[in-house]
Image (cartoon, rainbow, N blue to C red; front, side):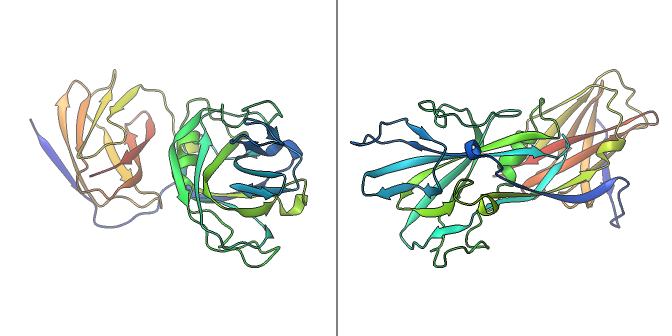
Length: 300
């Protein structure tokens, strides 16, 4: 069994590589919503409201509605191509009420190709299928009304958005939805109904490593994904000769030292135990065609 080692001594520029960003704001009254998750004299558990002027994350302290909530947010027309690498993402809110109480939030995405807007049907937020990826957020105190900055922005949501855009049915221009749950008191932000120009804003940064130039005319499969110490790739109906492999990181830089074993019959095993955890792009090139695969490395 022959072992081949590639050592790349320089970082080269990548044809077709680009870094891009999109900013999308909630644009409809029904695209941000609150769901009651506790019984109350004045509201029923599972009730959903889409016409609130504020989003209370995660406790409604109105004297008539002392109850914890789930928040649903929908962002439309996300122009990111299938196959993009998400490098940074966050949701930015605008403070509507000052608060310094302790709040612990969990943000997840809806596991759907293009979710629909929220309806005032019982459990319309809780009943949605969610991404495996989730991001915890313990926001600092919000002291200044109308402030919209780093303190009002979530941590990096790249893992959630990558999971959504990795879906086979994802198409540029689809919508994305997020669900926020948690414990503690509240951070209160403007909703679309409160003031449309201060509604939640989704910011996404992504890169493309020759995506538009890849001719995916040959069949591949690889496992496991996420990978840890090894990644096994199967290329069907291809000759084992004249194949070039390249790994790129999220910035589009080539990984400068990697090796693989050719096991014959179009099967290759890559040694990834030295890779830093994260998202990579594996480029596969032959004389006739080329293809790119997203690979998640998660070493223990």
